[in-house]
Length: 72
Image: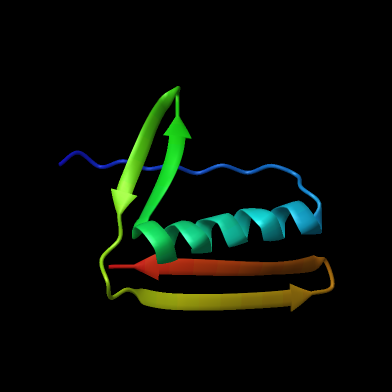
């Protein structure tokens, strides 16, 4: 299988970002997959039952960051 990478960044309200996280969580829970569009092509990635979950939070004088990572 070829490597597929997808990264996107956009400015959202906090509420819209939360909606996106909820949608991702719902997709993982209900369908065991993540779907994204890249260059007009829809990709679906099946996620196994067991994953490694990492949560990283950094806060400094210049701002903060929350990073969530799932690995399998």
